Length: 193
Image (cartoon, rainbow, N blue to C red; front, side, top):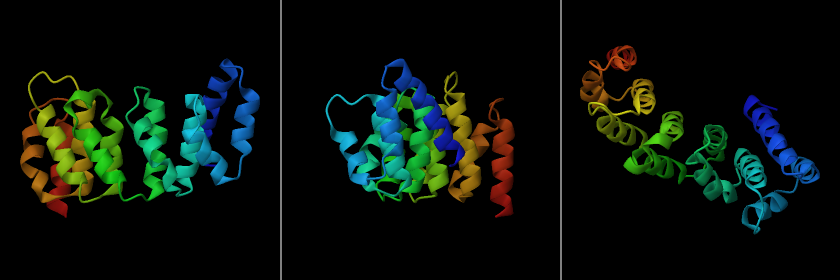
């Protein structure tokens, strides 16, 4: 059992216990039939913890029926749900994942929730990754923008991806105190590649 799965089950066990649904949680945790897990995603009135558990398990198993639920969770206001969704989406192998992550990362109305889509794009190393990270970072370099953590993730991601197209934006990030160190490191990676 990997660390993300352990963290997920601990958190969801607490949620199920608080709702008086521990037996349902135990049943879902032990379920081995992917069809049963997939039905949880579409059944009416299933609690969020159950949908998240089913989507995570299906996603990690490569079952594309989890895609839509995982994308919704990637854009959730709860960062722990986003982390688990990104983990499962990275393992899912669905070709729609990079496009969905790019749409979430570049949505100016959802910038506060873009950290995990940005990190997922970096991990995926897809054709959509660099353009989406650049578009997001460019917007976040505006004076006074409060989303510096998302900007930092973009800078770090662009450094890891090592694409020369990012050089002007990484240079523009140098004067920003919270981004300067990561921007210097990213530019160093571009020179090294």
